[in-house]
Length: 219
Image (cartoon, rainbow, N blue to C red; front, side, top):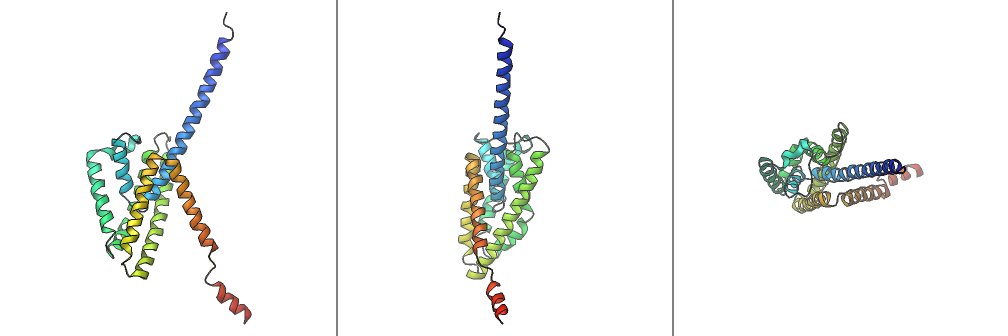
């Protein structure tokens, strides 16, 4: 008597399948946005994003990948909490900050990859691991840019301006971690806008060699 029932059930299953696919795709995108922001923050502070993820998981604000749930353990929270305080404090001391940057060169890409991998809860293997490694390389780029800015500050201010630069980096890293956990899409958009503005400003600056080349052409 209910001939339309099979067609209705089939259609409902099809709609449910498409809904799950869209939800899964959205979860991938949100996780990617959070991973980008966390890996960029790791380029500024190696341990702050890992500590923030552990604390956020303890409060139930974010889920962690099964391979990274140890970040919320008591020993990990203590270790990363102490390491965060030491890193932030040592970065305020001239000369010591340059030594810290040298030591952190291999640490920050690893921390960035781990932070990104931790939020790739729904990403299947090996894609989660591959993208996390790529984002870890992005952490290295942020670290290199940070080190160059710090060297420029040391040259201009003889190191006296480095604590202020370091405090600004603390604020940026902390903001990125908080927004990555609470509003990951917004964090990724803001990060891309910052990179775009920096690249656009650099392209707008005339090359220093231009006046010299024009003088040689005239002679």
